[in-house]
Length: 542
Image (cartoon, helix red, strand yellow):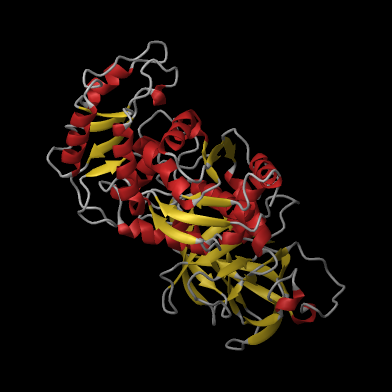
């Protein structure tokens, strides 16, 4: 793993004997699908622990049953497995509810916590501002006995949501707003997806998380930079609950990608509005979406590791992620021919109905992948953009009337005539071929205008191609409502052909010659081949 400031801290902690092993955790809240931004946290935690022979917990931060669902828990575990990691243990924050409750009772007994009746709005007013100290709640002076009684009644479900909270008694004049008597328990009258109906009160993250870290023996609690101001509260909870294990919180910058939506709220809005099909829509930056689009776990891992770690939020161009996918697949993806915008080409001097089989490498850069047969007949499909009736200029390297090109792996052809439809569009191009120019025959005669690819119309398979663009307009205003920023052309569906040797297997990846990297959609079948464009060769990262 690439060196970074957290790895340096861990090395020093092991060297001076502070810890005997490194133990990390990935603690997602199971209220949504994970996206590419979460991949940094997953990979960082697992790779750092692995580099020291340590271990990593997967702990679900399930302290808010109003938002959490089992389907998200299952999806998160699948994402982590897909990325190639196996947690040391899978735990739940709710596993520690009893311990957290007992520690809260002890805090009340020590005069460090009290039950408050202030509403959310009043609590916000009493909190003060960055420039003004807060005010003590009128309920801050309740006796220990009264607080114990009220807290137990909260647990027993005597009060409604929002009626009471349990707060720490720290300092309402602290310059850090997080230390101004933060709430650590609230009432939620909802069934819990893991703990059932046992609890009516639930601990808040800033209280529960350090306790859970300590209970699991986490040595380094890694989190995003937004929790930097929360670290004093994390340390306060650890100090005043007397744990055996004392973890250390370390923050690092978030990873953002230019022009990419990473807000859980916005991603949910995209799904619920029907703009995308679901969270695994290939346009989505979710891990399930990237997987369906055709990204490999190896490319995502190398992308994340290459960005390094710092205490600064970073924004990376999407082309960088594309680059790592192409780098991962270039030596292991089969090259295949596909035509997305078919133009029919008829070779008038080639025997009608005859099919010739030509040998072609599966990967031009990796000969160990062997060869396949491609077919050739008098009727072919080429890309519409590979033909022009009139040659535009001397730099034009494709087919035009009166010129010759080589059909990749086959022969020279010359375009002689165009047959048009009633509306003036081209129906087919009539050509002749030169049998002496077969690929591999060491022909040293004429020089063709260029080389183009094709598929044989007699053996080609029909396919549907999903061509994806950014969900956001290029000129989108971040301050505008999401619906105004969305790109209506983010999905283009076209119908074309793939060569006979193409495999329809879902998730199978291939590089279409002169086009890009593609992956079969999850719904692809032998009778209905659906192919997703993962990255175009025309937009590569430099």
